[in-house]
Length: 227
Image (cartoon, rainbow, N blue to C red; front, side):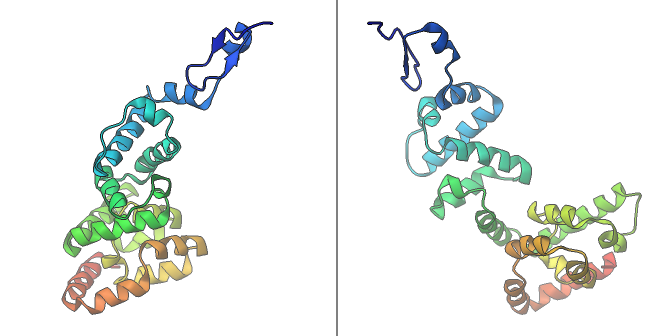
């Protein structure tokens, strides 16, 4: 009877024939190669931060490779790139505080928690400044159009991406008549749903009522932009 001569060091699967063994692949083997790449090392770094913030020692790479959260941290790395997340460490810290598992970190509601957290840490004036710079940059890049033409040129999908990346603040948007018209006339139901998940109109209405002086200041900025 032929004995098993070959065994995968990752999943422990055994083979009698070398040819079959050499054709073998498994998730752990693929992950062992992936972790050597920049994306793999970044995912491992985020995994290590997550463990540190929960009071655990930094686990070895082998533990990460076999972790049930391996794919979740790979997705989070891609999410950081796509959303241009300015402070991944701060994001992970908030997720730990909210006791959200890594598998939920890329959900829109998790990102909304982060947005609300960052909004509280950033003054309305700073948020308005980022918005003004974003609009000026966009107008300059599009044949130096006037700022009052911003909503006539930007596509709803591009607009939503700016919102998700925190480049356009509701302090300016909700005080702009042109945005209100853009929201109802040009944005699809899907676009509006995404926007509303990020910035609930009812929540911001309450915020405006509680900060009339800032609203007055923002309306002046909106008027200067012609929006």
